[in-house]
Image: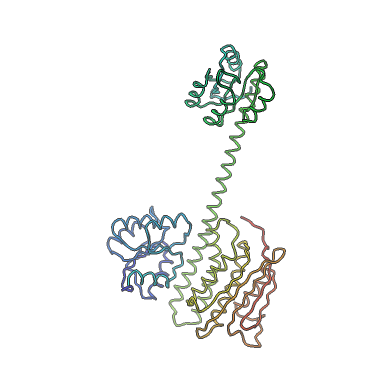
Length: 122
Length: 355
């Protein structure tokens, strides 16, 4: 089941997004879409109904990843996996209020991702 | 009185004798500065005025019926702590005068020497002004320090991110040549080196101290990062760490990390073939006069018996020797001893802190 889950990637740094896409593909996961802003993440979540959102926190535009995740969560329960390079206490506490699947520090460790995905979608 | 200000000086005067109040009022009207004077004759009006209005200065008689200056001072300290408090009184004796000053009275003027009042007022006001300026300067300093910290953190953060982008570009490009094992190896080695440097920046932006890196913490994180990147099972390689608490500047931490990275990558690539189990020991001890010793060993297969570690052309060994000896001004010693053994005694204080 885990390999068929729909993953939405929200990442404003295109090279990072390419790398994550490639890493996930290698272990058998495909993205349903990649977007670069929080606003687009909300639209994509409505359209694609993803199972997991791999969400960067610092994004271009008026909304950061935590704010976007909050809006998405308020519409429909989706598993959020934050993937960020910000590991300060303030950001972490804001993010953890949304009860994400995990709060991962970049770079993405695909083995950890696979373990989390398999445990959540057996 | 030389204080010239467009704002009138707001004074609250506590005095029960109408005659004394008038005498003092005349003195105040003669000041160079416009004054706005409120007169309170008892405790309740005094408190009411203080609760209602802001004052630049409080003048207070010592003895009043059922009230006195020390009690009035306590009320002022609670309601208007920045207003200077001058006691104007008949003779009260040295003991009481000293007590008043101890309690925090700004100054003390005798009623029969009212000509000293203008000087006492200007001194008290100058003191307040100076205190205020000092407080503002301190706040400005604190603010600019915070700004510097934020800026530095952001810079470390961006450096780390930029390095990640460079690593990403390399890996993505290399993925176009999946069968070229030499190229894949080269890219993987380079990735490790980039991550070793990136980790220093990552640790700096989340640390309290913006220039020093805690080395035990760095070694633990770097070692686990390298083990993860080799997809080594948790129990296959046992890490034995013995690390004295010490902190290095970025300029030392990066070369130190690069050496450790080369040693560990070498062990994980060559020392434990056929998925055999093994031990990697890393110890760092603090020596005298800004020197440290890194001791590294694995219990793997070791190098060929006649292998000469120095003067090899592989980049890994070249980095260990040249960084250890030229950059860290140390002495590198490598040998076969039931595996690879390396010790480097080096200087950890080559640079002055710049941030």
